[in-house]
Length: 158
Image 1 (cartoon, rainbow, N blue to C red):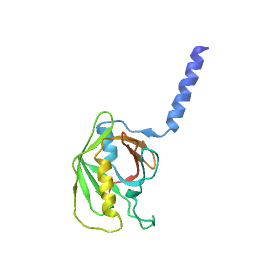
Image 2 (tube, rainbow, N blue to C red):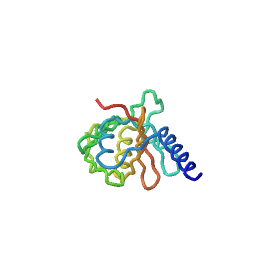
Image 3 (cartoon, rainbow, N blue to C red):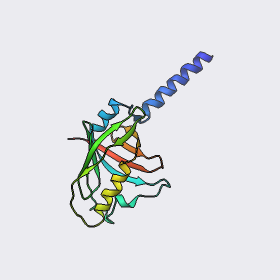
Image 4 (cartoon, helix red, strand yellow):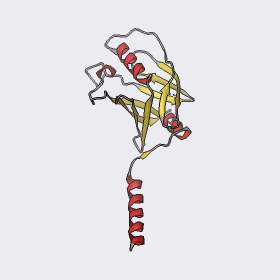
């Protein structure tokens, strides 16, 4: 009787895990999955779950340029605010992202775009936990130790 129960539970666990969204493993496999996508920022919240509005400075979201990020060969490239930004990055064995010092173009922009660049740069300067939900529409979550969360959706990188 116990063997039958164990077999039933094992099949149930397999069936459930096949339906669940899969998270990517750490290390080179995670970096390869990040590199395969161009990520677009969808939402950003602080430690209390409130929107980080500095990252979305325009009231008309249809006209709003959204930040995109690409990971490739140990480098990260960011576009969508006022300036293009980039730098090196590493992901440790615990799936924590560390972005190195960022370089940036130096254009002046109105409408809060420069402040959006600064806000995103400050968030990415922190060590962030990486959570990647794979599937037809992959979702990347970057979480700070203070509870800030950046949610990005992926489309295959060109």
